[in-house]
Length: 255
Ligand code: G
Ligand code: G
Ligand code: NA
Ligand code: MN
Image 1 (tube, rainbow, N blue to C red):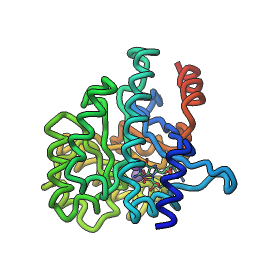
Image 2 (cartoon, rainbow, N blue to C red):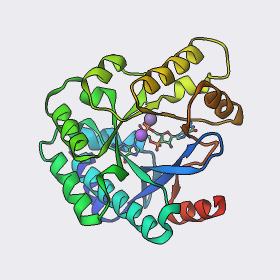
Image 3 (tube, protein in one colour):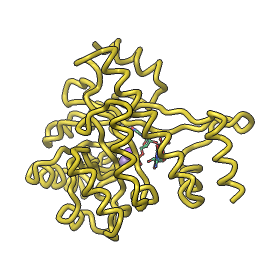
């Protein structure tokens, strides 16, 4: 509970901010979309990794409030980019949503309210969820179905690392597969990972989904992914997650 209280205070004190990482078209690297990721700058401890505080926010339930703030902030930012840059702005914004948020019966309604408030169109929002979040069916799956019906795009994050990745594709309305970095890391080497990366783009194409290769760090990986049929990628090779002013500057430099 202490950790939860600390996170709530941090939220009220404005210690969280979002960073944005481009999702690009292969092979040329044009930015088509952007993923929002949360960051915490603690006044004494400095930068705290989300790998550390997101699980605590999930356990304490504060992820519901923090997640709502992230969603609002990200949607408002996407609309601001569109106002400023029009067609040159990223077409979509991805927001990570945890299992705990999806399990809230009010979550689909919250998303609808935030879209109305900010003026973002449903098709411009991508909700990224992990495979485990929807594995059990129930409220989380109903929420995903409601979002999808509304036109919000659904992405399965870290795809291929869950226990039943392919089964989920039969039961969950999915638009985007984010192929996990572990497959991308070894895509240039002959072996199991490359075979799976090849199979996953075929499954994705066959089902009419979009595949995003995650964690692309080298030009060689990007070339090989393109050769295999991947047309969307994300990773340090194309751009690290950066705060809004830097993202705006970097995006301008690309154009
Ligand atoms: O951004 P980074 O790679 O440091 O994130 C570490 C972990 O925290 C990842 O698993 C990522 O999905 C998660 N994470 C980052 N930002 C968010 C967010 O806004 N919401 C949720 N639920 N998880 C996030
Ligand atoms: O769980 P999720 O896939 O949302 O987490 C994304 C995390 O991966 C973010 O914390 C982001 O900082 C990190 N990330 C993005 N691109 C790369 C990359 O090319 N290499 C590494 N090591 N991490 C990356
Ligand atoms: Na993600
Ligand atoms: Mn991921």
